[in-house]
Every structure is written in structure tokens, then in C-alpha cells.
Image 1 (cartoon, rainbow, N blue to C red):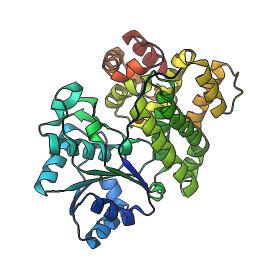
Image 2: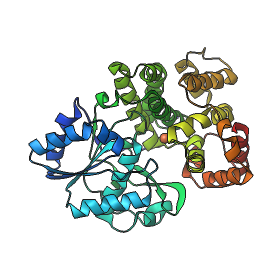
Image 3: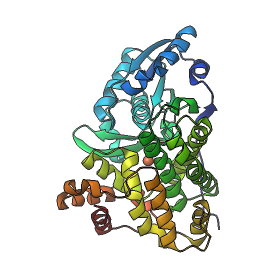
Length: 383
Ligand SMILES: [Fe+2]
């Protein structure tokens, strides 16, 4: 029986190669003339921002570039970006990068029209009532799905815990996808961002708020990740693998946006801020143990679909499915537990991660009910 669902992603998705040629048209469609690019110094170093800037200048646009984006962006970064948008009277914001620049730009675009400080909106505080300032997203990794999601994950400057703010008013107007920009991504970052896409699809597919549309997207995302993430990681110049992973990240992001996430992502915020880990690396380390915790609470038909995707017979036992997923994570050169961080995970740290995780809405979408004590036991088992 199909449970009630809505599916709403208003972002226009434009697959264009090269992105620098496509952006002026996307900006013009939004009546943009003064463009603020939000990115990070690493992306600037690739020359991509120069190419985009040149193309926009030729199209009679002025550009300013904001690069003060941390790897875990905070409310301070968002406030600075918002100030620059005001100061330059930017009529379009273009986010170029992975999740950090895109989330910073998404949060700043929301503040431009809604006003106030970002921290006022965190934890469901101040309501978001106005559509964000026009935003175009250009992902340079295949993983976060932030290019088409309504959420921005930003840490509070005074408290390292990551807080997601989400609203249907926060979608980008356009996401321009060009897989060529991911070709130079190092293997480690390719694997870490790619496994994040895999987990978005997995948590959306096994959560409580599934729908026929997100199931379709999640299954295809999982299949594409399983097939193409290894090649994309080992042979970064393989444009076909890069293209398929960009699709996988898009589908996983759409599934996540509409159907939510689960316990891996609920634990990940606290783990990342405590251990200063990249989001994808933390998720990789959490996945095997959390999936083992969840597996027998996943409906039979969904487990059968997963066994088929990972190349096992549909009647394969749960242990074999968990082992296959663990091997997949390890084969990408990613951690499969938190043993490297054992010394940082004393009982205070574990308690605080467990308590922080239980405040995340994602825990309520997890297929298996979760208590604080479960979070504690799982982190202890991984360390
Ligand atoms: Fe994620």
C-alpha cells in the first residue's frame, strides 16, 4: 500500500558542459547583472572561477567572489557572505563547490530576503517566510546533493554542533551540472563524497517516509554508486564514471531531500564536530555498524532490492549484506569504523555525541527505533 506523499523540487536542473558557457544564460534567465560567486580557495586554485568570471564579464555581468568558506561553515561565514551580497548589491548568487560553499551560499541567500542572524533560524526558531534571493548552484563534487536540496547545514560560531535549517523557500533556482569539473577531484575526496551520496540514497530508501518516486531515485542512485564509484575513485579521469556519479549524487540528493535521512546522518554531526572529520569520511566510518543495527528492521522487499544491487542472491542473509556493504566502503580506501579515533572518544565525548544525535530529526526517520543508549553503544562498538 502506498502511503501519502508529496514530491516538490522546484530547482531547474541543467546538465551543461562546460559550465562556464552555460552560466551566463542561467544568470540572464534570472535577470542577473551583478553576480556574487561563493566558493572556496581550493576551487579558485583550479582556475574554474576565472573561467566562470570571464564568461560572465563577456555577458556584461559584474562579478565579486566570496571565498571565506570553512570546511565546516559557521554562522560567521554566512554573515560575511550576506554582508558582501548586500554591499555589492548582488542580484544573483552563484555557489561553486562542494557542500560547504553551497550551504554557505544557500544560507546567505535566505538571510538576504528574510533578514536577521542565521542562528535565529536554527533549531526551528524564527520562521522562514520569504523565498531566498536568486541562487544558482554548481556542484564540484558528486556527493552532497546540496545543489537541489532545501537544507543548509551550518555550525553555530559559539557551539561546534552542526545545525541544519530547511525550508521550501531555500531551494536554488537552477543547478548547473557539469561532470568535467569533478575530474580533478583527488581519490580520497571522490570516495568520501561519493559514499555520502550512497548513504543519502540508502537512508532515504530504508527510512519511514519513503515514496514511489524517491524509491525510484534511491534505487538508481545506489546502483550507480555501486557500479561507478570504484572507477571514479581509482581512475579520476574517467569522464563516464564521473558523469554517472554526478547523476547518482543528484538522485540521492533528491531522495534525501524528500524522504529524509537516518541514524548515520544523525550521528555524523556530533562525530564530525568532535573529531574534526569530513562529513563523508565520518559517514563511511559509521555506515557498517549502523547498517548492521538497522538491517533486520528493513522491510523484506527492500532488503531483497539491496541484496540485488550489491550482487548477492535475493535470499542472502543479513550478515552477508552488511559484510558486502562494509567491503565496499573499505575497498574505496575509506574507514569502516572509528578505531583510529579511539583516544578521542572517551565516555564524555560518546555521551555528548549520543545526546546531540538524539536531537536530530533524522533519528525519527530511522527504520529501527533509537534510544540515547543505542547511540552510546554503537559509537563504543565502532571505537
Ligand atoms: Fe550527507
